[in-house]
Image 1 (cartoon, one colour):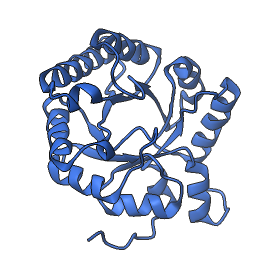
Image 2: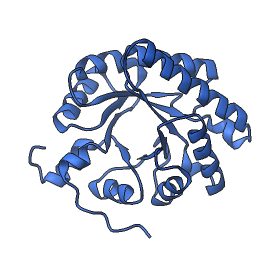
Image 3: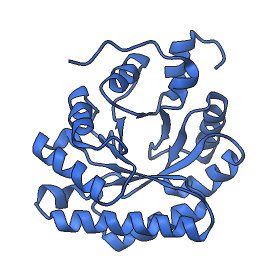
Image 4: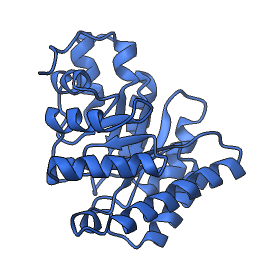
Amino acid sequence: MVPAPRLMRVEDLSKTLDHLVLAPATSLADVMRACDEATALHVASLCTLPYFVPAVADRLRGTDVKTATVIGFPLGADVGAVKVAAAEQAVGDGAGELDVVMNIPALVSGDFTLVRDELLAITRAVRSRAANSARGGVLVKVIIEAPLLDDKLVRLACKIVVDVGADFATTCTGCRTSATVHDVEVMRDALPEHVGVKAAGGVRSLEDVQTLISAGGARVGTPRAPQVIEELTGGAAA
C-alpha cells in the first residue's frame, strides 16, 4: 500500500519536476516562455524536442534548470544508429539530460539483445561526447512504457536499464499511456537504489505528483509543472 502523500516544501517539490514541453505544435515562443517559467520555479529540467535544444540551452545557461530532450520519441523504433547520432547531437547542442525511449516493438517481440545493445551504444556515446566536450555528467533516463507491459517485462526492461548504465528508468512517454502507482512500485522494486524511477504520463495535479513520489518516484515529468507548484503555494511565488 502506498503511504499517504506527504506535504512537500516547494523547494523540494520543484527539484523533482521535469517540465515537459513536447506537444507537436509547440512553437519556439512557447518553449522560451516555458524556459522562463522553469527558471522562476527552479524545476529540475525543461524537457523539449531536439529541434529546440540549442535555443533552450542558451536560454537556461547560468540557471539551475537542466536542458533535457527526448531521443527516439515516442516509439523508440528508430534504427539504432539514428538514435546514437541524435543523442550525440543533443549533447553537443547543450542537453544535460536525455530521455531515451526503449525500442518497445523490439522488446515485446523478444529481441532483448537488440534492445540492450542499442541502449548501451547510446549511453556510451553520450558519456563519450560529454567527456570530450568537458560538459560534465549527462543523465540518461530510459523510457520503458510500463503501462504497455506485464510485470515480468517491466522487470526485464528495468534490468536492461541497469545493465547499460543508465541513471533512471521512466514509466512512459505519456502518448496514450499514463503512469500508475503500480508501475512505479514494480520499477522501484526491480531497480537498485542508485537508479532512479521517473514517473511521467498523465500527471496533471499536485496530488498526482505526491502520490507517485510516495510510491517511489524520484522525478516526475509533467507539462503542468507551474500549475502543480501553484497548487502547493496557493498562488504565491515560489
